[in-house]
Image (tube, rainbow, N blue to C red; front, side):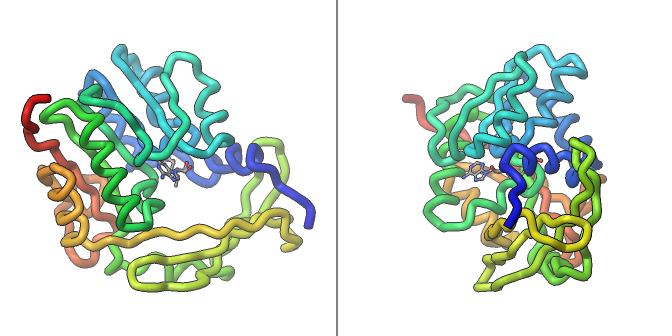
Length: 246
Ligand SMILES: C[S@@+](CC[C@H](N)C(=O)[O-])C[C@H]1O[C@@H](n2cnc3c(N)ncnc32)[C@H](O)[C@@H]1O
């Protein structure tokens, strides 16, 4: 199979995921915070935009994917760290942490979820906030991830490519799917398999409470509309509960 490199895939990511209402939602939170940690930052569009918009405080990005992080690092005035959420060693350093672009859903295993939330809580100063969104499992977004819904785009090097998705399995709340990047005629260039967890409101609330968070607000979309069973998104703003000193 001809290849499409990790660096090409990272560059294509921003074409496939252009700035949208979700980014505006998070940018407003970032601009109101003095120190911000973007967990699973991808290509780093959010904090890059915040710096361009005049944010003068600490902005830190973290991602375990070297190609994504290499794209994020193009800008020298944002701090970056290679690693997973669970591996973070920050201690009371930020007043806002975010996981955007459904990055939270890549945390699939119970232990990884618990360890990631604990590390995010530890990274926040008391009263610090954690904002993230997950796709509402009741909206069953994965049912639209099929080859009939292919996306044709031109990548940053000017090459036309086609992206298709096919669900491989749905086991409990974990959806595993194949993403194929191909030439426009369908000849595959690259095949990626990924799993995403679709936690419901109750499961999210339980995990957050166990990690020392109180849910401050829950929305069903980017205009801060109330979450209801048909909402496509579960947008959560959680606040770190006070911790004993030490
Ligand atoms: C869907 S992308 C979202 C990127 C970005 N936040 C955005 O809004 O476009 C998910 C990102 O999470 C990263 N990721 C994967 N596993 C992770 C983990 N255990 N901890 C933190 N980030 C992770 C991936 O490398 C990827 O860049």
